[in-house]
Length: 593
Image (cartoon, rainbow, N blue to C red; front, side, top):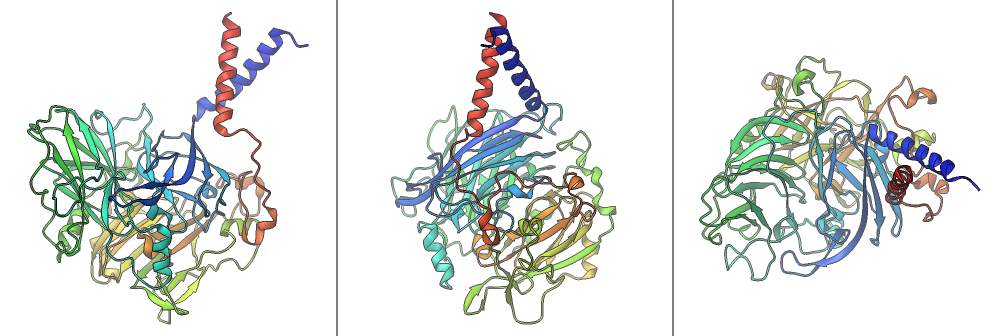
């Protein structure tokens, strides 16, 4: 039998080895049980998607360079994927959580995501990407804090406050999905939620009694960082706090030039950080409002989210009319000018000590140009579909990079057009052929009547221009080539264009999509394939620019035969972490006693 000293030495060796490996890049573990619960955010009982019994889901709160491990237990009755919108996942699109790159997690299975938030800071959120599930919930905030050695460009706030805003329907996500499949539009939402709750009863006629609303508690004189995310389906929202200024400080991973706004339009999928100082006299509570933009205010009057800001010394309840939204229902110039005013803080450090603006994107030669146009939905093969450049994307049964690795042909085509097609629209799995380390210019042209927002997985991009009308070569003369903000989601106004620049330095298949959930569901997306040709056929070199396929990868489609049955015997990552902690505790007890 081994001696106590031998066991102690063994335990110490394991503990020191594992703890030293964790110390370099710490791990953050999360366990997500995803299930249906019944909730009544607008006073009507309905089925929502909860995480660990909570709606919205718990925030993921980590620090730059942390390794994030999320063990997902799918308790739904349909397949599931989570996408971590705005998280770069350098070299690891295997964890991206969209249909083109990952096989879905089947019902009653659990699957573990593992990725590193490498060289990144900022405010983001996660959500389910399949089957219109985001309309039922499953979303939550994702915060990446800077390392302690990297300064932030403002005084440390009193606290972070997460605010999730979004339009909401009382119909289930499966019913909404059926409506779209049947060629119908979603129609006007039933309300706007703030942190999963309905509106404060600011108006007895518009808001029924008994609805639970969000109250945010603050202390007078203190400054808070409000991280606000539009997690909704398709409605742009104006965010404002009665009698308080919003000092914009960050958006989707980039510190901004700090400017005060009385309100800001936050479009679907976008995230912002505001510094808000509690400088009022607290004679009453104050309204926090998220109201729809670019709609008939009379018709949409009840579709307004209202929460309460309550000082610790408040003397009474909020009352009276809500603070006014921008008065420009039929003139969107105000909103566009507001968007143009958001600039990159080129002197602030991001995730690294060097200034954010040291990238100098304006002096880099563009290697490729895509003019990508969306139009109102059309019928293709008798079904309502949405398109980009005349192509409605069809997600393949076999994820595309997985097909590449296993030499399966015919899964997709590298023929996404550089400009809109002139022929009839069609359904295809058509992908942009990106050039590794190329610098691509993408013009997003919106020929619909509502705002669209576009998101690119795996990257942030530089928003360099936007204007009304059709983009032309002469439009480049209006570009901001110095401090255009770097972000992950940009709006495109109706009848207008937005220009973005992207440095294709991240290998993988990366989803370019509208965040408007109805248009995305109907095919308004594509992918950018970025492959390092130097390592593509040299396995020993490939890991330099792309992580290998993870051991727990799921297989589907043409590769279904490779999928093993669900193995529930190994301890979860959380359990492993607890065992490690126990081992180290035992070792220290033995060492000092």
